[in-house]
Length: 102
Image (cartoon, rainbow, N blue to C red; front, side):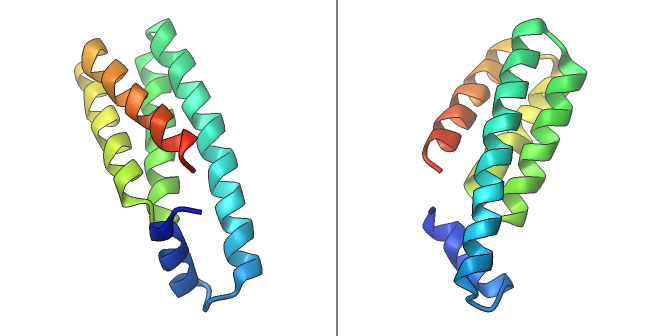
């Protein structure tokens, strides 16, 4: 478990390790799903779907205390609005790396 998430979730749930573990597990599962969805959307050039996936990843990361990953997702959202494929591909690579490290 990422230390930033452990600290944040411990604070949110009074140190209840069962709850923390469950929330973190759901976070990891959701991020893997949304990262795959975002990657497919980027490959298809579906900017709306990519934006929605990035928005969800941003929210999930923030709710789990993972501010580094949230920042990447925020950048990805900005890139989708500009339809900047090269920048979005770079951010997507960072997202995949972040998710792999969860």
